[in-house]
Image (cartoon, rainbow, N blue to C red; front, side, top):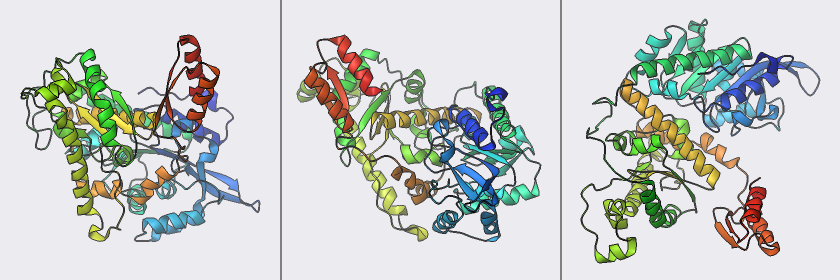
Length: 500
């Protein structure tokens, strides 16, 4: 991994400005963290409202994005008020949130990251937490601890999986006390933490450790997925689906409106199709159907992707289409016949929703968990052999983010299966994160949706005066737009203006 640090860009900058610079470097590298993921911090001296100097932890606020962060996105917490909490044996999430609210130097600052206690308990000036693909490729295996020990030795701590919050922060702090010369920690199923005496040291260590993990994966990941690498997998030869781009487009013309209607039963959605070579190679493989159902690459992905995607089970030996199906779906489309003339996918979507309801009923309220309302049970990610991936979101931007996140999951699964065996969290543990109020809180920070959000509007004659006015009104109300006009140049300029 390339180190992007440029000393000329940080010369003379304050520690807070260096934190912003470092955070943006991390955020712009998708291999380190995906949109909204990861958190960073620095410890500095600031004055309180009485002008007194205080030791302050500046840590990323919940819901902000590292690659576009600003100084105000980092919550200022009084370290002296936080440290006494380390002496406690336990602390609930609600107590933690309430306590941290009283530790803010500025009451109007954003809610601190869930990892704020961890950043405060480690007595290092600068700390970075990332969900690097290469690190997760190691931790999401059956021998993650042994593999990391082999690569990093005593330079990084190994912390078994614990959900973020007080207990994780305390475990890392106690481990640090026993081994204070370490450069960071590997969190099982959760990523990497590095620290140092300044911003550059922490960042350099992140790049160093991820590079080592990448090299290990590269050296051992040249072989195909090994037999036994997927729990319960039947290792069959990859599906030889000779589906051309034109055939995929024909499939989507028939299916996307129907899929959008089913996936949007509870709330309208916008769909995004991804048929990149890596995605097609994955969905056409003989092992992806099993790997995809093991669980997420990291719990942080579930906020957007749900625990598992829907992997569409196609029929490689389909029965002939009926006259009604041929009339409805058309002749000469082998892909359509492989999914049973249109009904197969729809039935599988409904079964996915029923499975989620069963999963929800099983764990909701169990073992002392609070009773929570069920989230939308329909899939956010659909994987279709021969076709690719279809992601759904409240708008095109969110759908693309979800697709991007799952592309990283694909790479992590592939790496983990090549070097050992892919292992995710058990369903009960995953439920605790998928329905975790502190994680769901991030969704409430999004701007309110417009009156026509999740809708698609088409405007004909859009380049004319009335058409332009209608187009702008629809866009301002939150609609996605298809603009058409006989004057191609003018309608393209209008589309560019609205997008900008």
